[in-house]
Length: 186
Image (cartoon, rainbow, N blue to C red):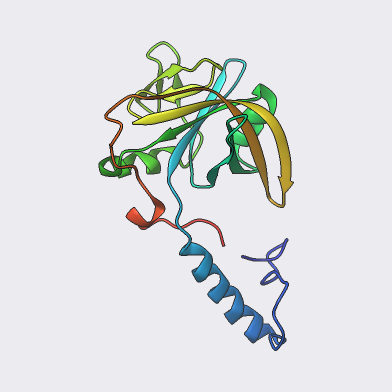
């Protein structure tokens, strides 16, 4: 985690961490601890007009019971950020634990085939909001954007669930970050 411009670790630092070497070591430790936090892995669908995207995402949480609100953290430089900001909708698709290879297919902007209704070759349909939902997702939440919170180099999008469903057995085990060799953040 380098400071803006790649100049070194980002503070704040606890007492006693004062030299560049100490800050570097502390920064490595902090990242390792952050990587141990349990996260799910999801594919988030976004749409603005005729443009669509799907992206691997691990920062998602339920925020409220009434109304049903979920929040997702999206890096500001991502195409998905642009599409959610413009289109004001997103879907959050779970991924089956035994389908872990799919998350690597959505780490860069996708190739959309609107005639075949595929994103990087994976079939999708439009949710009630118009956001794309992967057909093979065990479950999904379809959301309309209600609020955007600036969160450093990410935005925290708060969406209200307008539709939800299971597309396979409700007890399908879903993928978590620790099921892969991936890490993100910290």
